[in-house]
Image (cartoon, rainbow, N blue to C red; front, side, top):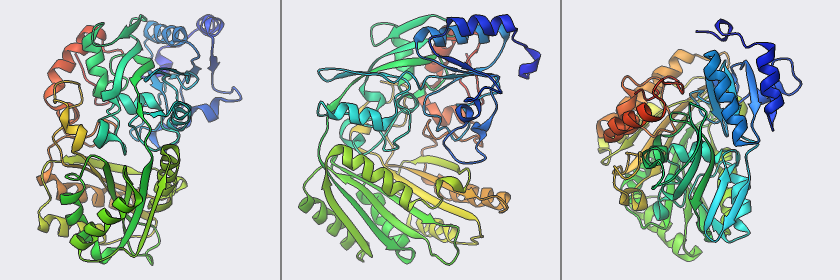
Length: 469
């Protein structure tokens, strides 16, 4: 159903605008075109043209917009950072932009954050108190979307998911009510928000976390040539997920669009230990691999410096620059080590039949540690028992063969699947999944359906692959 089937009257727009603490943007307004775009590359599905964008500066702005959308039968979606590759943070209906809600309040080790806060500004604000949150490195990623789908990063193996630190949340429900939920108030809703809350049950406007001390870290980046890829991947999958909690070592295999440049294997991350201890750990890993990296960078940094370094490093070693196009990815949690033949097949396929204008990535993130110490049913996040997460990604620039890119992606994903758990990280949504809800939510799906029936019985908050009552 299109938005033209449900016209909003001029009186509706005037009433909404007059009641807002924030701003209402409609097509033709000066800031509209910039406000509707998403930061995930040209051609992303988030480039839709909303009927209107509401920049919300108060909880009541969100509630008023939800009420208008419900009365007029319009879709309405929230946007925090706008980094959803599946386009769920954009709409042809009403876009509820919570990015102006970005306050940060600290009381001891408890921090309350507006849903629009970005990670870089949040880290900077907390650093003044010697605190931080276990979360990612992307400077402009929104804290709300990250948390509601789980949230992992370099402190995750020490402290768990970002969602595991959540103490309370303020939510605007489909009926316009504003509720504060925690373990004692609307406990089922609070449970659901920790791992399955992205736009499914309500729109979160504020989150309260238990912060953790911000440690100094020793960052590292090592690179091996592609000829060593099989040995590095096989060694990594037995080492990184089983290492001490203080070790966060990710692996990224990249192939750029320039066919003259061979793929590169990158090991990078941080260890919350001394530079000497980190160098020794990397040396032991190289012995297992059987060859030293062609380059190695190790340095001790403060926690904010660590986040900046890793974000910049990620952009530097990524196969596709941000302007190259929209990446398409598929992923799965891996429950047991990939057999040697599977690693060989994965590496062989990664480097095969490369074409101009196409970039490829294999991104392996270690699990284990504190991720696994929370019971599966304690929060909505169901993926506690994996060894690591593998993401396959491809970017086809304009004019290159998009069908060939997808064929490569599907085959890479299939090669790793026999060792997979069947689980998919909710913040890496995959529109191509045949049965997505069990993949995202596992044994917690039925309880989530009951929560949906209680808090959004008419299914107002909807998108492809949404949980239905």
